[in-house]
Amino acid sequence: MKFFLDTADLDEIREAVSWGVIAGVTTNQTLFAKTGGKLADFEGHIGKICELCPGLPVSAESCAETAEGMIEDARRLAAIADNVVIKLPVSPEGLAATHALAQEGIAVNMTLVFTVPQALLAARAGARYVSPFVGRFDDIAEDGVAQLAQVCDAIHGYDFGHEVEIIGASIRTAHHVAEAALAGCDIATVPFNTLKKAVQHPLTERGLALFMEDWKKVEQA
Ligand code: G3P
Image 1 (spheres, helix red, strand yellow):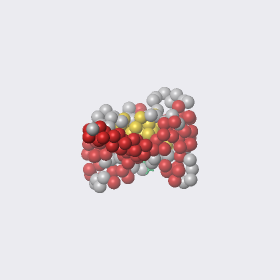
Image 2 (image 1 turned 90 degrees about the vertical axis):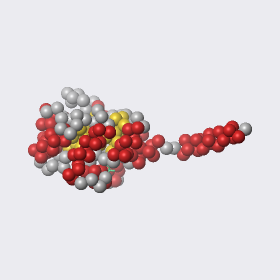
Image 3 (image 1 turned 60 degrees about the vertical axis):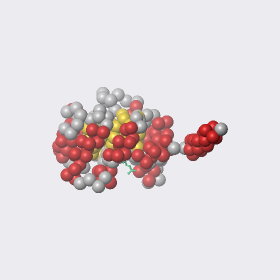
Image 4 (image 1 turned 60 degrees about the horizontal axis):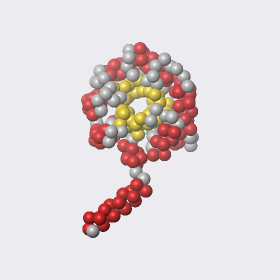
């Protein structure tokens, strides 16, 4: 399973890229708003993210309400850099826009996917990436991981005539990361805090403290 970073924060991207574990970045309006950026800065900000991870897919979302608006946004965003992927919601308008954009060779990440039929429709319309949300499913007392596993089974069994990868999204815990990998998910898009927690384990910390302590004894001897 590959890791994408789910953030619009440039420092977080810089640091995670330096770890050598990041294969792409996903953003959305909520994540951009958290950076304190203004609407006028949005496209420039996407450009900066693309520069921090050249050649890696960077999802930039359109919030247009019509297929025409989404297509217009997508063409503008795709012109920022070769590695921009357009993020669109799974909806009738989103599907129509995805279909048109796929024919133009513009990659789409179809987001806000919660069910197997939504995922199949997204892939069939031409989405290059399909993003089922895990945490938000848990939020409504459903099993987000089980739903992700079903989407993986359904999508991986079909030939859509183009490459489709599943991005496990709304990943909130190291447990979600593990379960996504075990479900055969292609990619998990992970917030930086969750990525940092995924590196940690109390036994790793305890073991490291012990090694340091023993090393001091060696130095003193
Ligand atoms: O990639 C989608 C993600 O940003 C949503 O996460 O935690 O708001 O459900 P969350």
